[in-house]
Image (cartoon, rainbow, N blue to C red):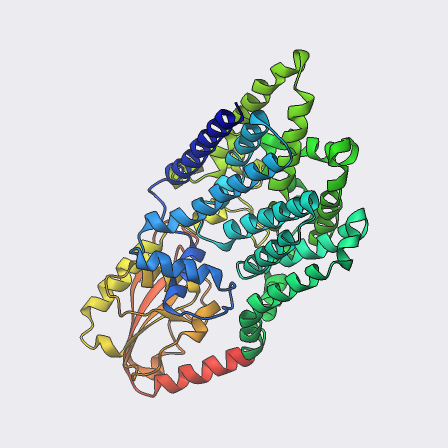
Length: 512
């Protein structure tokens, strides 16, 4: 009987994984390109290193695999969907570890499937990897609590290491977890030598990245300071807390059940460190005015606890009818996720529902202002248009080998490198990681210059003395693109050593 149930549950899990992949492909309108950050991450495959200004190295490793597979959009979307599916699998295994049965498994899988993870997993960004590793770390901790076998401490250390190499955000997990352990009976773990050996393994795994940071004068710290000055300053702490409710709005009752269970349910008392860990981590996020989505990794494990507890509560009498009702409730409440949080509607359709988008905060960008499109969606428009117009210009230049494509930001450079039919175009920027990838091995005679709408020198007074001619050759015209108005200039016939000017600028910017 147990074998039959296991096979049935495995088939159900396979069904959830299949649906997960299908949804991640279906819920994106063909009106959109890739998102701004995705181009940068994909370009990292061409510049292997143990660290980057923008992200740790795991993303570049996956980008290299995508490159080997042909760099098609299918594979770009495949890997975040894969990590989203693996998050469901880890929660499934967590519930089995907590002695949950079929209803708890289905409830949790449904809650995760129809949540903010749908939105997170459509984008090729480290967030999908980050959430997976948070969940995996918590799962290994549960395995250690239940078995007290040291191998789970080592598994935890390895998961923390790869989580760190995926996104530094996992440091908040550790900072929230340590005081939580001290407040519970699990503080005895600090007397287990294997904890420190596992920490040593973690250190050696992440050491190459730490050395890269030292060698490059800690660019990530400088980036975090810039992030705090330009974006986090606009973070409203009340909005942060509100977003915590919205991320899993269709299954909020499952998370609330988890809090109740961790406080009052006797079989879960040994897991109370997860309650304290949540509290400490949220306090840290609020204190540092973190972006609200940084905390998403806290919730999959809570959904596991909540699902097992509700299975116990709904096991007999009239309450057993609440089981199918709870599943249906998640399905019904997830409809807004499909309609508003996913790019299933094209830009024109979105304009017809702007008040609704505004009412749930989806029009608010990182600058703290409301716009006419959700930021992620606006960041998925105009890129192929830009690349085509740059290609049209590049095609007409006879001296291509000595032509540089210079962009204002990493999105422009990455999109041109991704979409261009000229594989040797190598668009560059002083922005983000591109400042380390500027080729200066050939004399620059012509420049295709990409300047965004905020440029203060539309007449190119700065460049005119350096070239024989300057002219506007195109603009991004998509009215819904964040890059609307971005202008393409052609600067021909360099009169001076452009390589030397660029090299000097690179040194000054790095020093700054």
